[in-house]
Image (cartoon, rainbow over all chains, first blue to last red; front, top):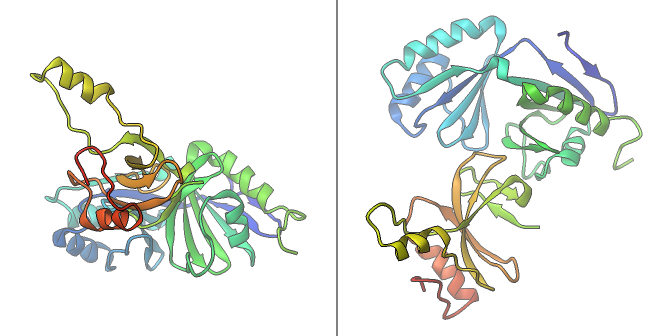
Length: 180
Length: 109
């Protein structure tokens, strides 16, 4: 499927060449922290935040779960280095690339478009750049990563990607601005 | 609208992002227990007008179960706390005492 895009007062586009891994482990363990540092040379993200290492992103999903997002070109190498670094530890590392879809919102009013669909506080004071939050988009579960002031990444399950794309396209359409 | 703060992910969660799990601090009576205890464990639930302790799941969020102390009549939330405990922590009890002096709920007060 080609990258699809919607042009409105905020632009919505789907990013296809992304791989995602789920890591379930005791994130408080020093061994796990050291292994991740070794494999990705990045410290663990704080709760409700993301850590970035080059083109890869580590998102804090829950006290025992991380989502690792990487460009597909680097994914195989990253997976094997993680697998090696974590071997022998009590963890679950799973490639979930085909289970999830990723979208990007860009534009000055991204926070407003998000606020239309997710029951969360999108004010910069509550959700600064670098924040990550799992929530819902209208009817379906999803996650939000505030990458820049004018750019938000969205993650949802692939089975609902058409719904999420249509949802955000409608919310971002010209003429649907809340504040003129 | 009820908004609870999830003690695991630290986010304020809207009621629509949460799943209600009923009464908190139940004692499980399983195999070998008396019929009366088992029945009470399965079906005996408090339904107070006022202070209540409940289980909630951060469903569209981190996925963890937590406990909340709130008033069913006014929807006032006294606090939320992690589920790995047999009774409400001191801070929660103090917060309730400040608003509802002399409160009691099942065995707690």
